[in-house]
Length: 162
Image (cartoon, rainbow, N blue to C red; front, top):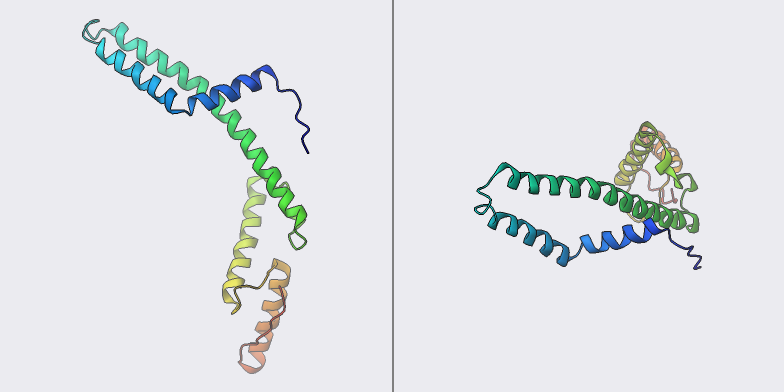
């Protein structure tokens, strides 16, 4: 499914700059610029203007790169989330509740995390590490196991999928 739309001028420029700034050539250029600046120190008698040149240059580049890196990070993150959503949607046993959870508030994500922590804890209690678990089924099975333990003091060997 290739439905690529025409990229905007900014999108093209941002992609080119991102690719170039992540290259060995860009690092070499930056290191060379710093080396030239160091070498010219004695020529300019290490003046305030000489120091201001490198400070101003690096500040401007850093300022612009922060926005460029954030734009690239946002795009990559969105692509990864879409791929994960596709995997969830395609998997018959995966919970569709997990699609688009990146839009939840931090407190809601913390609640989900606690559920999955409980699921992990329940899976660790199980003898079979290859079992599929869900929180609801894990709670039900754990409740059944607890009741059975109370009755006869033994550990049930229930092999149902969770």
